[in-house]
Figure 1 (tube, helix red, strand yellow):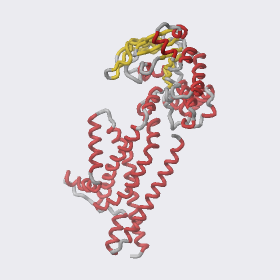
Figure 2 (cartoon, chains in turn purple, orange):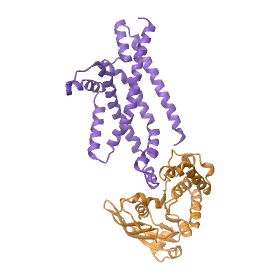
Figure 3 (cartoon, one colour):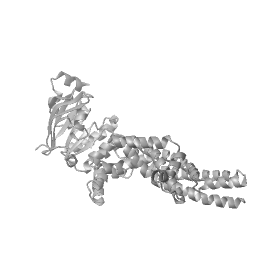
Length: 216
Length: 237
């Protein structure tokens, strides 16, 4: 197999990787916010549930979570697992896992806000929802961008775990070609692809941070 | 009618009783200063009157309407607060800080809000700062913005919680000047302060608090001629 064919095949895999990355972010960032609300709730039941959720998601291997979610329909409901379930299962597992990490990042950001901001908003008549949306959240976003970037970069690399339930993303393809050609080269190329992907992610996030520099 | 009536307010934190049976009535146009040593309960009293702390017992009445859990949001419209450490919104420009609640809470048209905001900034000499962000301001400017922000909602009473305690003497005088002008314009104000001379100059009435109770109350002349030894010691500091 020549170099170009390898690149071409890896690129198709890369598209799947990007799709997984974007879907996970789009779903887990909002979900994480709601989990963090639960984690900070006044209702102790909600707080406990969120805490246990976060604890399990962070305390067990993502690879295991992938396998469990993939086989869940068959174990719980006896449904025959189809090929079409593979990708949604990966997206679901990644979303649930990353939401737990994002929840803790949101919580750190929200709890770091001075109480004076809430008091000023209250006196000016903002409702609780308005206070959060207009006053608190924009400041939280600025504070949590660096740890969120960390998670995003980890996510790019974690997408390779999709391989364990045979979702054909870049790493799966790299490994197949590598085995077929008995060469480590395809894996190295995949590594370069991941690296470039992450350079891009870091760059975009740096721009986002710069955009938030207008206030302190 | 009184703008504000506090009747036998009590407030404890855990076992510590901070406010003991305090009553206070404020008329329209009156400037009342609350002085006293740290820990005397003066800031807590202000925070109770403005619903930032729940009271354990007593009544808070704004313009004849007794505060309950339900009507606090409505009664909020009667007062504004200027905080010791400003509590400006850092992600809003100076003008946005002043007008955001007008637009999003009062639902006043943006055009009208901007007009009102700009005229307030002009009044406080901040017009050239309208587009900058709070971190670019001096402490005195920040405090003037926060006064403008509180006044934008046209409250009947303005509370000040040690408005100059975070400022150096030069910036302090700049803020006090603004408050004096408001007093001159007959704005009803309740001011918790450590600035004795300022309190003497600006107030119609001074309240000296210690250990959660009002020890002395009267016109600045009365207070500064008081025979109360504790009061004399405190003022002469």
